[in-house]
Image (cartoon, rainbow, N blue to C red; front, side, top):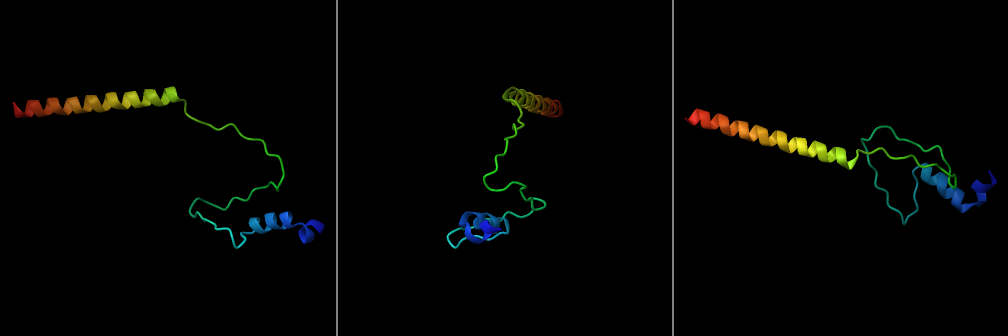
Length: 87
């Protein structure tokens, strides 16, 4: 309780959690992303980073290659069908 009355940094952290800002700051509010998620950590608390999940580059290259081959086969098939219709 003492820190809320006399510590400016603690008061600033709690004010930001409530949505307040200083006159020099500007907020960009993003809406439509679901519920407002509040953090359960306080200022100065150590938080362990989580390993990000990603798709390996090799997998993306294989998907891109298969997509190009599929589009090429479709285009060739349409050309053959057009040739047979015109004949």
